[in-house]
Image (cartoon, helix red, strand yellow):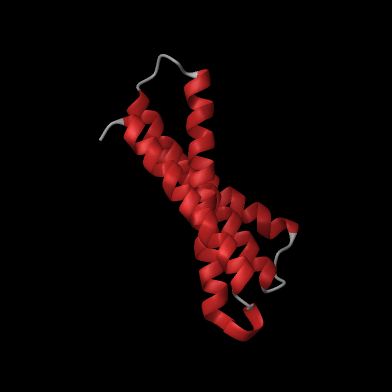
Length: 122
């Protein structure tokens, strides 16, 4: 798979995830649909943020590091995009239960940073 085909697939997947997120926000009532409606919202939000963050981080890396191997940037951007999406989703889940405080958000962000540092050290 070439980088160009990967990026086009990621763009189409991100658009599909954004369309799914829009459909969930428009059609799903969280009170009526309960746990399933909330799960659909958080799953579609996770995939939307993953796609957007991956494309943005890859674009930033490509602008700053023109001499690096592109394949390394793709994997790194995807992993960091997933960590960003996981942190945002975790904070929104905590907020939905009214448990999010500034130190909880700090712990979630620190956890994502520690996971990324662990991957970078390998």
